[in-house]
Amino acid sequence: MKTATWSGYVSRGQAPQPLDGYDEQGRRRWDADEVRRFPRPGVGRSRSGAGPEAEALLAEMREAAERIEELRARQRELLATGKRQGLEVLAMSRALGISRQTATNWLDRE
Image (cartoon, rainbow, N blue to C red; front, side):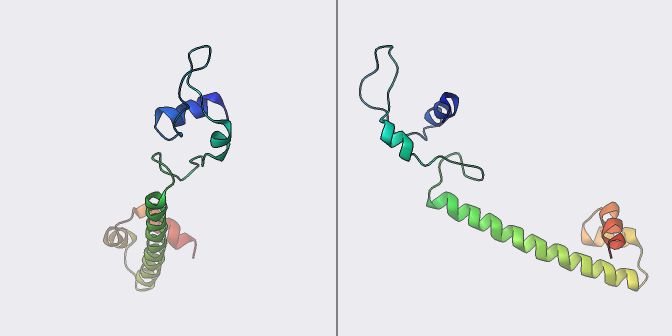
């Protein structure tokens, strides 16, 4: 782990507590084994750590993303139905809450 990365964890309060005392140059010290076991927050993790609350929030975000995909699929179905019935793209895009360009692109992919 780079020093700058570790310094970031320390400044955000994510690192374990340092050992008592300082080294000969007046710097704080950490137990090497504790640093090796430190669960580094990674991509998609909250800055406050990767605890149970963060994992629950990430699960809720994934669930919301799945629902959005379902709704987008329904929008596409409705758009295709509207096209078959001769509705104008502008009216359909406004009703669906999407841009005219998005509606046109979706229709072109069918």
